[in-house]
Structure formats: structure tokens, C-alpha cells
Image (cartoon, rainbow, N blue to C red; front, side, top):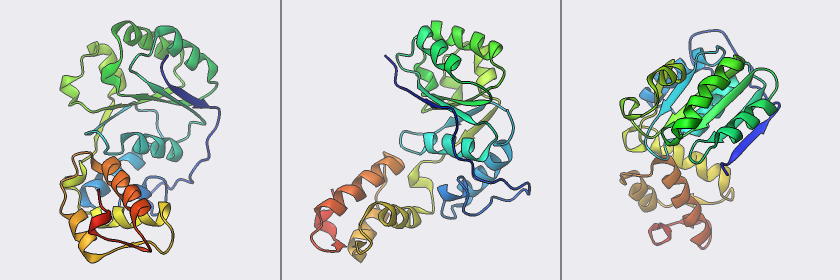
Length: 231
């Protein structure tokens, strides 16, 4: 069966109505000053309170699901339902959506993997439940998604394109943030280890970075992560 996750309510981040990105909020915590991300997140914050369906694109590991959850946290819907589209049956889709009550964010992960009959059923579910706000994610370019065109346009009211890690300018900030959150307070990188990480291309983007840091923190002896500790 398809993996799914839902709950009736989720904690909400307070919202502000001005046009700039609010520091310290669910969305503001996704970037450390990268100009492209700052523009994208400012746009996301303006879109979050509304009901416009959103399509989040980006290579694997760029943080699409994290952005979707941050949008929910910044928005107004109380319910949150996350569905993996690969292997999602018509029955599972209908039952999961029926179980949610009231305004709900519907996260459709890897929308490009949804089967044709399930895609047709999704259109009917959205007709019956106008209080569902779909946020879809994909690793493909929008033009490469083979969904029925009417459904595609219902899901892609606005497209948010996340950049790969190799194009971001806040890599050093992301490294430091992850170590502070997931490693012991005393663990730090040696200058040579940090330089090595900053010089990598990161084909797996943020997910790969986090895994490398977790492995290095586990392997290091003492409080300093050095070159031999990096996978």
C-alpha cells in the first residue's frame, strides 16, 4: 500500500502581513541568506495563507517536502495529509481524504508517479472537497509531468522551483545549522574538512549533505570532524 500520513491539526507559526520574509518563521528557517532562496521563500510566504494549489519542483534532496510543510505551518489550514503518489490506489486516496475534516493541506509527493486511474479519481476528490489545498512535489520539469492537462493545471496554480545545493550560496550556513541541531554541542569541523565540504558538488543536495554530516559526526573521535571522518 502507499505510505500516508495525516493528522487533524498541526501547530501554526504566527503570520505577518507585510511583503518581506519574516525571520525565524517556518519558511525563514529554510535559508541562510541565499538570494535565490530568499526570493522564493518571500513568494512562498505570500502564497501560504491562500488556497492557490502549489507545485514544488526540484532535484532529489532539495527539500521539497520541507518547503511544503513550512507552507502549511505558515498557512491557515488545520489538517495535514501527506500521500506518496507511487503505488497510491484510488481507494487509498479516497479513504485518506475522507478521514480528514475541515480545511486541509494535501501534500502529494512525487506527483509524476501517480497512476492514471488515481489521477482521474483525484480530480473527483478535489471537486467534492474544495477545502483540500493540494501542494504537489516533483523531481521533473513541469513540462515532463504526464498528468491529464486539466488536472495538472488544477495542481500547478503556482510553481515554486527549489535550486539544487550546488547553486546555493548558503552552504556554509546549512552545514553549521545541521551540526548544531543533530550533533553534540562540542562537535565542530576542522578547517580542512569544512573546505572539503564546501568544494563538493552535492548531486544529492541537502539530503546528501545531512547524511554526510551525520556519518562524520558518528565516526569522529573527540570533538573535531576531520578529513578522514568524511565519507
